[in-house]
Length: 259
Image (cartoon, rainbow, N blue to C red; front, side, top):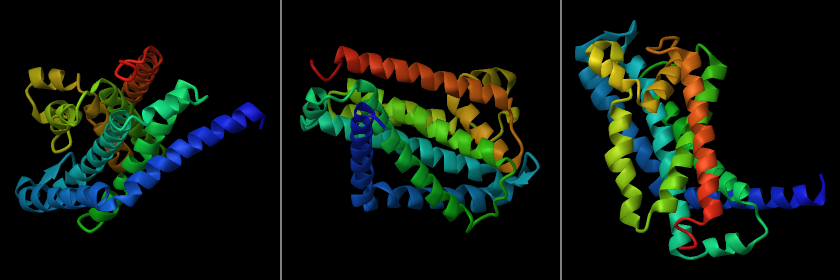
């Protein structure tokens, strides 16, 4: 490894380590609440409501919603970790240390995104363990399951980064999760199959990227999906590429940082 590559690796590893230590240090705020919240989803939707609904897609309702609940935990935490961390760096003015350091913008982006992915995936693992207390999980397509959850965490970590760039207060950090991310999640097929919807709303649902994440992840775990898996991967990868270029453009321009 040459000197430049070694310096870049140290820079990336330092950013990633700091991000991981950050959310591990405050685990009662970052890791415990999602586990409790998702447990309540399993109890209320899975046990209480699910017993009245019966089967969905050839599976018990608890089995059907488990992949969606896991994915919901992953994307929410990957998003919120980057949004809160990068905005805090702006608010406390220590983002200036990164800007004057000989670190390329893509490494700054990669460090924060990787940190968000780490928290999202760790929470996803915790929620998966919780789900085993309520239902059995037999993964049908391991590589589809792993690749989709990694891609989904990356996409929403990028979204959190862009949110933090534009945010001018801590209140603006919560606007997107409250008014955009949460509705998209609930309308993304986590708790139902879109085949139950009227044709018009099925077509509207196809505009929601979370639908493709949830269904591809559900296909990986259960072997059933409302959408074509290849289309899901194409859409998610395209979104990641677009968000990456846009985030790098904002960093290069200094939007929300050098204003």
